[in-house]
Length: 498
Ligand code: NAD
Image (cartoon, rainbow, N blue to C red; front, top):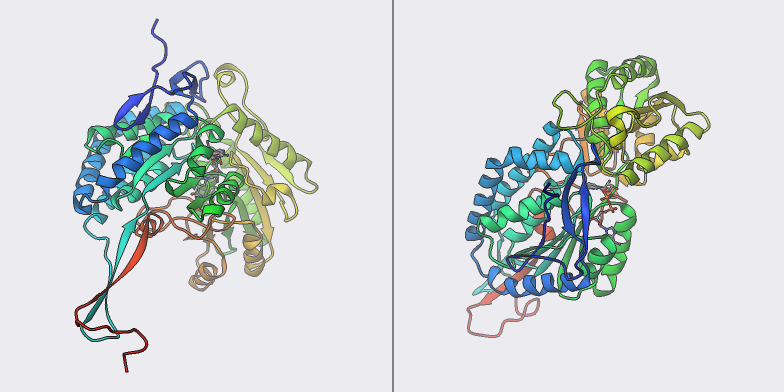
């Protein structure tokens, strides 16, 4: 019998084994008998090879006209379209989310790649009148060199594409380290990029752990920029590691997002939204609706309808089209979520309204299936109010009015996404203004970003940058101001301009 397929690192245009000669397994979280693939457990030596390749390739890639770089990305996007079903199935197998959602993840990579291909013909600078005669002034973007991407497992292809495509269109070269739970989706993306004409060394992939691969990448002086998506805990470490060299560092981290439901809201619409926002991707989204703040006049009505719907969610293998929620990504993620369920049950005043454990028996024994779980009467001070759970758990939080809802919404270390359900246009606009997050929705849940709008968060979610849209170009380039003096004389700014 043939064993699972072995996958290699990608360095300088070649598929190569790690110098460690060690590997790790990529396991299907819905069926742990299913080994999706064997991947390289790399270390500093592989990192060094990849950085050498990326640094060498940068010399030529930065000089390729941006519209020509865009043409390659355009071909990459077309190919992802062609292979979408295969890529989505691979992703459900390695990550667990249901097939409609992995198709969405791949679609996001398609959208981002087409968008950034187009940026090859834009990258606008400015021409600006000089204060001196016979002098011309303008601005232009310049790439940063080798950019490192460290990515999480919850959006295994979308997030790497959000980072790689803007970096490449700006003329940078790339080393990507995927999460150890989902290396196949990055492998698939890199393979397509290679086959569609990205030159050798421009994109490199090294698989392995955060400590053995991530940290050496971050600490290397050849690296111009680190773009990281993951937990706030690791993001802080990366930020500290980058500080001594003032290395560019772009961080997208945790969230504890809220939906606010006002007393005039369409309750059925809010139930639909909260269900999708809280349990889509098994709650493993940085934008997951993990706090639902409800006006006390409609609290009981909303809670009753919501809990009934949550109890009816079909949980299982995401490849089965009738399934609405897949497993947790790994045993350790499941255990962390189960821990929070226990913490919630022990919180003084919180009420477990449904769920509260893992599914067992039959096919559930082969995977990491947590129950969709709702806690009621959650208040500030409780750990489940403040901490990111990143799983199938959400909180119902009563509020006496709009002002208290806003106070509860902003009582959060994170600032990624928030939303309001109301029919009152004035309240909707006040809330847009009053909640301090990077993303805000009206009459929709906290998830569902589009690639041509900036994505990112405030406070402990980010460090001031945004992904996607043209804002992503800011992460992967620096501005240069250029002055051209054609007067033939020395002209001194601020001195000779009377
Ligand atoms: P994680 O922080 O554990 O890992 C993220 C990546 O960092 C992985 O590739 C991991 O191998 C690597 N890593 C771990 N330790 C490292 C170290 N010491 N040095 C360098 N790299 C290291 O996060 P995760 O569990 O993969 O993802 C879940 C987290 O990601 C959640 O907190 C979630 O909110 C966040 N997230 C944020 C966004 C966003 O855009 N804001 C999007 C998706 C996920």
